[in-house]
Length: 125
Ligand SMILES: [Zn+2]
Ligand SMILES: [Zn+2]
Image (cartoon, rainbow, N blue to C red; front, side):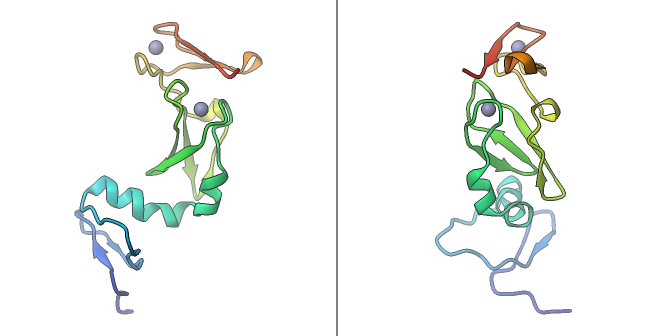
């Protein structure tokens, strides 16, 4: 077995990352922060992440675990990353209503998501 590189760390749950620690980044020993940071380089390149945008509202997305979250709070669609490939299909995305958290319907003809519970609508203008 190879010796771990400098900066190898042990996650709180015992998982080991052999990625060298980056410079100038705070190390937060928190389970979510660990996976957010350390999962990112394995899942998606920064170059790809920089050009990805929400297909509904065109707002940039950020990676959290294996989900790409639209940064537009009115839209709030969540796209899955499956085997390193972002699934940017709105119809397959999680579409939580920002008002009541119910799953919204996707109305492709109107570029709209609509909440069946509280009626809130979001339409890409
Ligand atoms: Zn969006
Ligand atoms: Zn709702």
